[in-house]
Length: 269
Figure (spheres, rainbow, N blue to C red):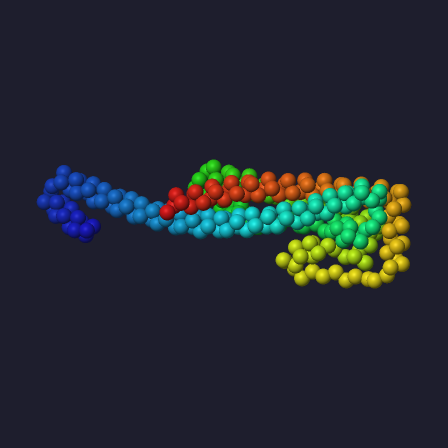
């Protein structure tokens, strides 16, 4: 096409038709510009199509991750329910028996209070988008902002959970329950063992020694020890109640984010 116009221009120059030559030259330039614009438009369309396809992949992965997070939160909530129920049973037994007497059915529940669950962030796709500065691939501005805030909420909850587990459970209550209790003779409750066996192979080794059992019962009913133990049982109840509340709140927010993602996926179909 360009060679065709060039021949015409040369012919017009040879015939001294300058006006027509200029018109053809301008027309040739316009055609080249239009061609470039069309090529750029097609290229931009292809790039945008690739980005939108990539966005759909990320949205699907975000959806799967949050579904996994919700399932994990259900497990965490069930676990905290066990701890809360065990503390309530221990407190009730303490009140009915005027202390820690007749403890055969209670010791396993007391030992369950030494266990805590570590919170894990299942949203690997969201973390990948944020760490690689690719979050802007999400076109929906509100969804993008909510995802960023959601990740911050999970980070804060994870840090608080880890701090509470270390400082308030491991270093404060668990040590007392192990030292004062009779873990070697009773182990954990069947309910707790069953819950753990859903995820891990869990078995406790028990020692048979009636004399040491009696010594343990006498020891935990000493006034100072009894006071410390019941205080920490009640405190463990408070910790698990707060942790369960946090898990429930995060589950609710996860479900809201999931709904937003599902709606966004629908807009791309």
